[in-house]
Length: 109
Image 1: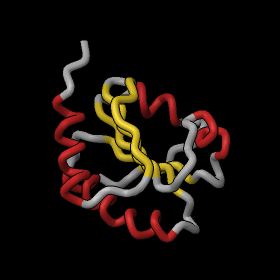
Image 2: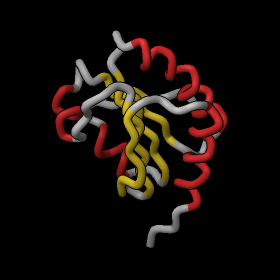
Image 3: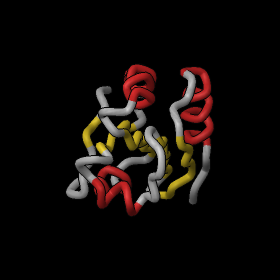
């Protein structure tokens, strides 16, 4: 599944309306973000049961500030609307796969 662009308008709906959501807060001018983008996109294609979204930190400064984003990329994961993972910097493909598996396994009541 392709990644969705998240904005202040749809952010809360996407996070609370889906079981597992991974978000990449990125600055399109960042080399690190451009390097991580294919890994994030590939993961989204592997996990149809997970929603993947991106937030452009330049265009969505309010969201970036609310999420305390200090570096790009920053990866966040939500399980049933609860933030369960937050890490600045991109991840290697296998590391991202491990995180996705762990987040999907979290049992929130």
